[in-house]
Image (cartoon, rainbow, N blue to C red):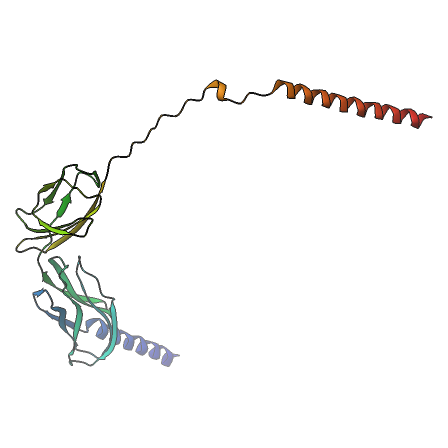
Length: 264
């Protein structure tokens, strides 16, 4: 009996030692990432994981940018030896021209045996975009009607390159705002490129049509004169009534004759 008690106590003490060793194990994560990435560069960073005990490590690695595509999460598992650093390189996406300037986060998250996360910020340095819109009063104009093409921009004095293509495919370089009176009927195409130093280049296209004259639609419902309404033919009605009465009387006479013959 005493041996069983001693065995249970020894087992419990052994588990306690393992647990204490487990919770006191030290795991360190080190991330080295460039402070900034520029157009055409690949986002990447180095990381190192080191522990003072042998462990089987499962971890996630990724980088997150608020205004850029997020790569799929990469879960990895490896056997970490005590005091032997495990190093790797994480490669993400290439910085594209349409990326907005922003602050991103590189991180390594250990999922097991104990959850632990280390992160580091970096920036994406690209030119910001700006708001630019083509202004037209409407989409359809009539021939020889004066048309004004203008623009609205969130930055002052952008450099504008505008090309107007007429229905006969002839092109003309114009400066905005631009006013003209079209002679040709058909569709006009407008291509505009707006740029400003330190900003992204904006490209806009617009179409508008020219017709010969406005279509007049008469929304008045034509009046129907009372004489145009079909009137029923009174003579035909009386004829139908007379025929119906004769048929009814004929049926009644047949019924009476049948009953008389049946009695006899």
